[in-house]
Image 1 (cartoon, rainbow, N blue to C red):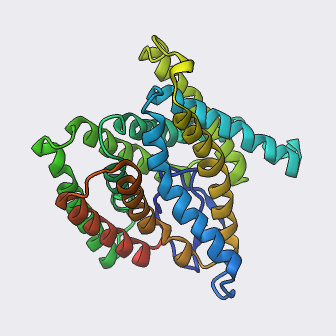
Image 2: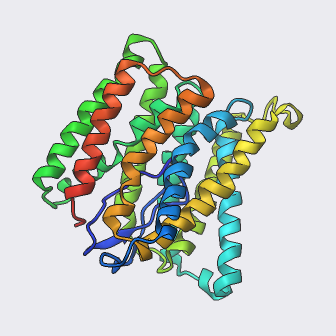
Image 3: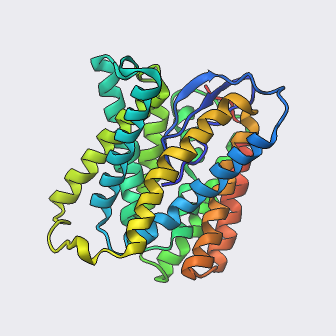
Length: 331
């Protein structure tokens, strides 16, 4: 799942680091002191990676599930990515960087279950029955859920944030129309909505739990925990029965490798670097660029139909996300 901007903040606030993905999590990082820095070519290059790669992960997921079972493939993806990230951390920072307390590990596991298993896993399952572009636009409503969760916890949203939530929910209603009319499977639409709720709760909780201080270490444990849980769910569902790896298409293998290396490692590293090198208001624009990229790629590569509910609902959701990203401060 592509990582939507959850709880975005202006330059004077702390930045958020999503889980290595589309469909990725948020972690509190160092205060973003890059507001006054010159925006270099390297910044634009890294931003382009985040725009395109995270926007393309929905397409990658759709291709993977053409010939691979959803939870087993998603579980394998995140276990592999988590182990690779842990290895890179140990290599670059030393094994001590992976040490965490039991409470920190428990928090990372819980957040990983909410984000990776609930958030990403349900999206992968949904993409066996709905277009990748629709999934991306439905997921884009995550910032609206986070604002609602903050309001429930006592943080009053801004006027712009409230308007963004209302727009986002209106767009969600329009995007649901293809399922209600029978054009796509309504079960897949509901699965993505459930995924956005799980992702939002995980993102909201991550800043309120005793997480590992190193956000990369936290991400590694979350991916491994969520990935192992995904493998377990796949086995319980019986996805291994009848699975013949020789019948998995080359393009599904290539898409899975792409998700591991580019979606879960390269784009995540680029995003983490951007948080230190660029204004967070600029970095947060990926939240409304990713869905557009996902819809365009779905139409170009998989010939997914560009229906009026998709275009209208998508435009409304993107406008709502823009309002939230532009006006909401983290509580």
